[in-house]
Amino acid sequence: MDSILNEISSIAKELQTTGETDIDYYKMGVLFPFMEYLGYDTTTPGDVVTVPLYAPDGSYKVDYGLRGLRDDSLKTVIKLVPFGSNHTDEESKIRTCIIQNQSIEYVLITDCINYSIYSYDSERNSLLRIGNFNIINGETISSHYIDILKN
Image (tube, rainbow, N blue to C red; front, side, top):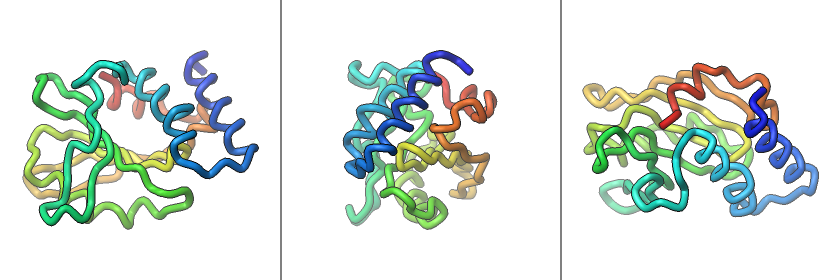
């Protein structure tokens, strides 16, 4: 396993053993380093966009967007959910947010430990689950998942 991914996995394990449930600790210790590992600069405006999309009525939001090939496009959007959430329950809500954005290719739903990856079909406004992984078991993460999420 890659040494950086191994370090992120170790941090995630350590956070879980403390019993910490505040998602902000996991974002800073796990999610943001994972975004950096994928090639996105979390400190550069535009690389990672905060709350890029909302449902038309404002009742639901997608938490992060990862820049696409063009500066004004998003390749991947990320929805943070509470620990233990059923990721499938989020699919229809996410579709209401991204229906107007034709550049989105992938959706990542995560509690910062468990990740579900979907491809987005804009013509059908549908999400197709590609797979899922647990960041604590970094050695089992498919290189295919990393490749499609990378900048």
